[in-house]
Structure formats: C-alpha cells, structure tokens
Length: 198
Image (cartoon, rainbow, N blue to C red; front, side, top):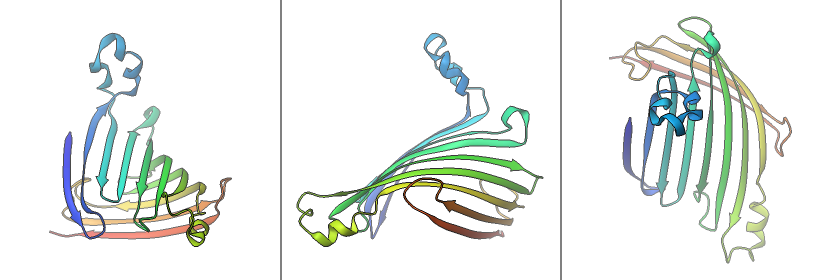
C-alpha cells in the first residue's frame, strides 16, 4: 500500500509526506533476496511500514515492523525506529531525536490485550549559528540526553473493526518508568478511552 498526504497547520504551515506499507512481509527473505529476488520478501504475515513527514519546521522518519503469533503463540512482537528534527519551540535551535521502541503484546482473550515495551531515545539540541552568544539559550538548550524507559499497558477493545470501527469501546491504561540507565528519570501514566457509535 502507498499513501501520500499534504496539509496545512498554523504551526507548520505546509507539510506533507508518504507511507509505504507491506501487510505480508517476510523478514527471512532478506537473506535470500539477492539470489532469488524481491518475491522472497513476501509471505511471512508480518507488518512493515515506512513513514516520512516533512514540513517547514519539522522532519520525521519512522520504520515499524510487527510479527503476530510469534513462534505460534498469542504474543505479537515488533519495533519502531524513528528519527526526527523539529523547530517548534524556537527558530534559534533544532531538537534532533533518535528513538527505538521494542514492544510485545499478549492477547489474553478476544477483547483484552496485555503489553510491555522498552523505549530508548536520545535527544540533542543544535543551536543555530549566531545563537551561541545568547547565554540564556545556551543554558536552556542543555536538555539533551538519553532516555531509557520500560512500560506496560492493559487494553480493552470491543469495536467492530480494527481499522475502521463504527461501534464499540476502546480503553487503554499505560504506565512507564524512565531511569534504567540514561540521563533522565521520571514516571508517566495515561488512561485513554474511545467510544464509537454510528
């Protein structure tokens, strides 16, 4: 699947991007691709996608891979690798980040899913030429560093369609702790509910 988008926002002005998705990817075909061709990359039932978005004040690139029923179990595993650069806060500096998320989910039943994830994210503030002489900016820009965090979630989903639901209820509780190494330590929690009706 291939999709492209173009939009406008008061922060970003004009932005756009595209997404390429393969819903039947086979990672084992990577080892045979050079001998047998691109057809070896299909047939594994895995999900692979690449998304990029470019605007006046930001750029982002994300690649995601997901394998359902890992080793013939109810576990779904995957990862997200992303890189971004933004100038939302100030035109005087860019915030560059690289992040890796390793995730695993287990279907307790057809409605309830348990998940765990590990997140590694490194951020760096790049002051533009001419802004180095501003001492206050130099002080405020010293917020970069490595985040190493582990999280868990519990989700309930009774909707009638996984992609385009028209009725049903979704609820998700998520907690995360950062401080397994890295430069920052914090705790986060979220609770999200969505109700769909025709």
